[in-house]
Image (cartoon, rainbow, N blue to C red):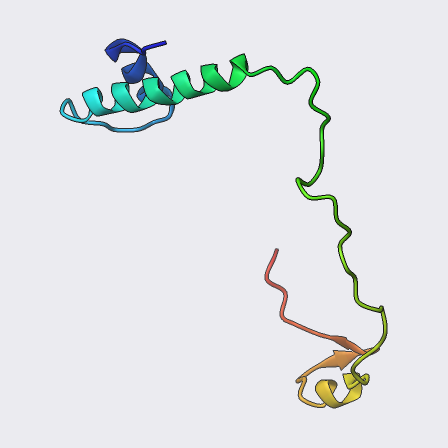
Length: 95
């Protein structure tokens, strides 16, 4: 399916794209090619194809969930200018 110049101009307008007169023929050709490719994909027989989440039949290896660092909260809070109940106080930025 080939797009017309008018259709490309309308698409550009809806997308708020500013394209020049010289660019329009290239857009017509490129967008028509994209639509032709989509038509080819739509024509493919996929009735017997099972949907899948991943093309390879494999399991994601996960690491063991364990603590690897010590809690240094008190050390970090020594650098804070203002604290209250273990929380950092920051200036209000929203009125």
